[in-house]
Length: 347
Length: 252
Image 1 (cartoon, one colour):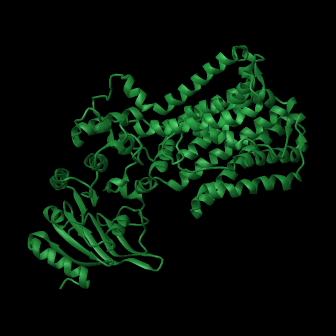
Image 2 (cartoon, helix red, strand yellow):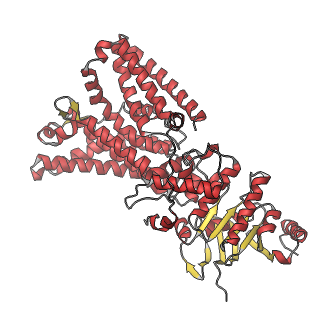
Image 3 (cartoon, rainbow over the protein chains, first blue to last red):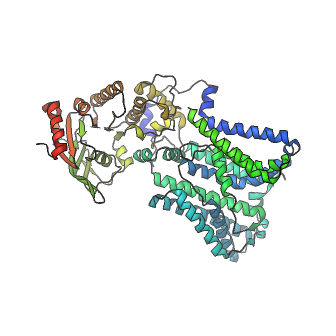
């Protein structure tokens, strides 16, 4: 596609648009992100005050950084899909589907006899499978014009079913990965402390942010979620853009599936079950509107850590595990109300 | 023969069984303002959407500057200099002003990454020079949803003008505007004429169309029912004919 740059060069003005920094304007423009940031720090302070022993020691943060990235990674591309006004419920099944491709590829390439090459190919196969499944989701949604919520309820069963049929419901060990450098690369610990899955989450978050805020793709995602009619009239290829968003979910789901399986060096056909609601909750807690058109990557990132920390915090504070869901629900509902309020009065 | 800026020959468009347009012959001259009149459902919008590349005609030919164009798409039509001012609903209301100005044609590098500072600068310049936004509350980073109807229409118009359009299509531009804002819009159409460009002006209000158009084309039930040079027909006569068309489907 041709860049517009040359055509407008003669019109470029000397004056630069610069406004003096105003705290109020900044607060209004970023109200959703500041809102979730406020919730994040408020909860953190409450946790520290209630259980200082736990929340002032590094171990708890190590635990968070080990477990939260598995679903936080998924929440990043899901945020993009939700901003486009769509929904994807099939990502837990895509995680498992990618690992099936991984395992089959590893076995089929046994003749190579080099575990590192085999695992490398198997990872690529998993990522390709995830992307393909995402493409199928998107293509059904766009070509047939069926709401994505409905389609992905269907494909979520479809791909989980495919996993169960292909593996005959079996689970298997992935001990062989430990011999390859992919193991420390994906789930190792830097300096024996900082988990690599956290590094990958940060990489995915930064790439997701760049794509959404600095790339034409992201601009079109916001437009489609805001006013799909207008986007079409203005020549945006809304079908292709939405399919790409679903492919992104597929790709990252497969990656998260690989990382989560490597962490335990084991494959369960139920891989991904249990991530659905925490991932969705992270997106909405982070201030992304279910109606599309608004949402931020930073909000989702913080949302995921809030969701991930609540369970540990509930126990550390001295309440029984029975309280967890009650507190989850309380925080999610209050945050969503806060976001709706901020959106209404924001600039 | 003079070369038309735009010409449609025998263009028809069907949506399934429904014939929206039948054998339309339409042309737009250089530096000409054509008013398109017709009742709801007459086929005005379909005609416009064919010219902008949004719909492809079922049959017929489209010529730009005397050259036949096959498979017209929205980006192709834009390259040929067609810009459309849609009703205000064509803005993305939750997005900022600069995003709306560059909607669908963001300034990017070869990798597709956007030059945001440039888009903001350009928006700021356009705001001050062309849109006449003086309120300090409005900045390139303001969300369009908060604007008044006239301000929104201003955004839509400036969006069309920025990209150096040769043919400007105004689709019901006065809808939802105050009297003062409407007067401003009519002046804007006169400016298009003065700048040597062409325009197609669609409106329910015959008075607005009559005042700015060189020629009026009346569409009825998917056909061109007739056309008049505004200098040859009086306003009352035109109105009588419009009523007659609506009732009988014929001008005489």
